[in-house]
Length: 151
Image (cartoon, rainbow, N blue to C red):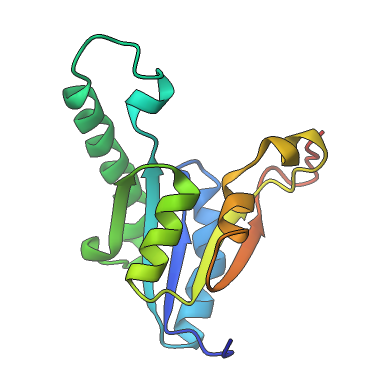
């Protein structure tokens, strides 16, 4: 891998920690004069409920999508990330981040990590999933409260 990045993708969960992840990615993108994109992945409601609900969840999924786009804009707009580089996708987070990164020639993915270990790591996290399937560099930014431990 080259030390020069051309396209940096920031994957966020829309929590307050999203700003920390973005703050780490922006200087890297600027230093490399790289394109900067930001992505949030919504899990399909059908996955959450196992497809057992006998009703159309489309309107609810659309509302969740609209809310996520609004929240993503609140995070990205202050840093000048254009709306066309703000992406909300539906699917499994690690799979969708990998797909996006390949499709749009991303060469650095920046994701937040709570530094889990032990059972929490075995149960999986988005950052672990992204790391283990990425075709490019991944920067895991430690997030959470200062001095907070995950046990």
